[in-house]
Image (cartoon, rainbow, N blue to C red):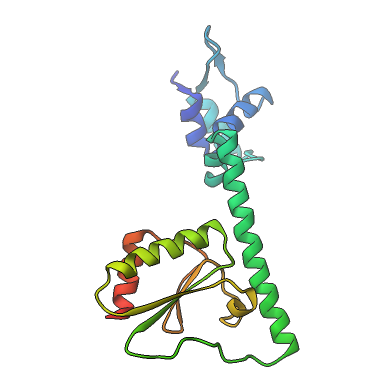
Length: 195
């Protein structure tokens, strides 16, 4: 009979290691405890549990990754996510209020000249700061003239529609919304839009 480590069993069950350990303590799967206290799970037990479909309480991959982080990192990750969701909610709320109270207004953008316009939309969360910093570095290395600006006012952001922040607008077109792409992907998006 083949035995799996707790980590291997958790991967096959698509749950976190703490959840796999909880399955053992709740009696959902049997294990063999080694003298050092480690658990070994028979492969047949994993197969039985998968076949029964009784993996109630299973967590997603992102939750499993979060559970593996030290507590301070988990708190920082959750705070950043809360900050991002609060910003997104504020923008959607402002957009809805704007739609109910008055007709859409024209956005006050810098005068169009020979240069392209880049706007980073975001009320000031860490991800917004990260996106602005990356765009700033890319624009500094770019050969064509590009006007870069930042919009932090939620009502101004709402004038672009119910957009998730952080967002990047290139000449009135939203090219990134709700995420911070890799620097190479961002560079390619900007070069494609500017050239």
